[in-house]
Length: 128
Image (cartoon, rainbow, N blue to C red):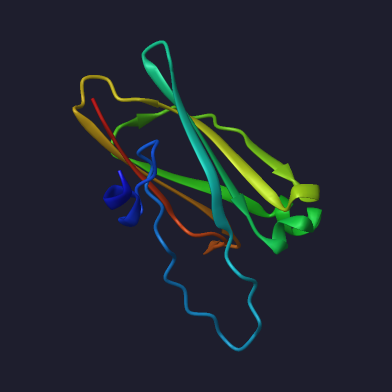
């Protein structure tokens, strides 16, 4: 187990990647970090919850400009809520995966503001 955790894989199988981000001299805000993620099965679907934290999310105005981009290789429910918690400096994304008969599915979630990344990318590979 320790060897797997050293590779960035936690006990729950979720993988955390470090962001690659080049900031310019304008003082762009730090990107949000993935604070936690959870997954659970609901019927034939899988529900995922990914929480991002950053100082910029403490400002309700700036947090309101943030949207989530989800890139699946299988079908994801079209409507997914985004919960903003300025007091905790966090944004939580909730979405469902319906893998159908697919043996695996790769998922990527990133927060965006003004069409630019506002967080690191959360990456998960679901397998049947």
